[in-house]
Length: 250
Image 1 (cartoon, rainbow, N blue to C red):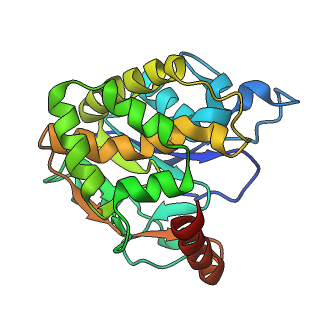
Image 2 (cartoon, rainbow, N blue to C red):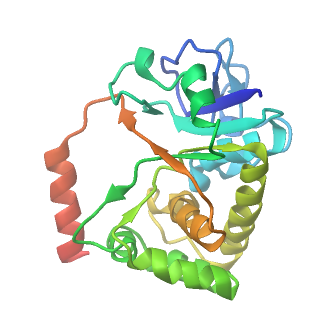
Image 3 (cartoon, rainbow, N blue to C red):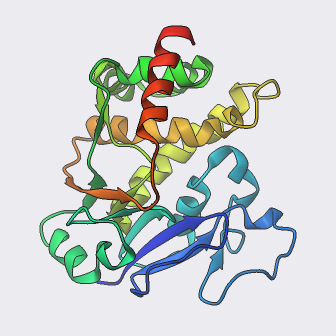
């Protein structure tokens, strides 16, 4: 089976040499130079696309492009700084390769990054301490009762799959993306983001992250988790302080 993992990026960045990976420039429709794509890259503004929505959908414009335009049997999405890595080591030589992917898909149809656990925060409280509550609340209203039951269950948990990172068979992706984008496009019409700051205007990408586990639970989907790495240094002291500040003062 043919597999392709799309690497979402909004700028020039070093990419894996493995042909499994396809760099995709997100938000390319608003690029100041439409011919600035490096060799081997594609833009998310070709074919059936939502490139114009990148400022509010984040890397989901790349997922939409892959869903609508890729002919691969297995489709994945990672970020230019965040990759699956079975040995959990940084470096592009350590990212998930074609053989490892094939082994994972011998008995699975969905691969996800390991969950992030907040321990002292539920998924719902973590979201509303970091973002406007309006969108995540409205998203629930747009779901049928089965999905609302899963929403309530997932939002009470303290762990979740994040980053809109995933690898799925085309069939599984079609089922998930059809449902998720339907919710997000309806949500666009329901909330007014004109008073949101630039960061909060990325709301549909943030909500999209939270929809994945709801979809999995509602449809009793089986999956396997894989380690992932962030290729750059992270200031964990700052991230921890920000986490506590939001919980206490947001």
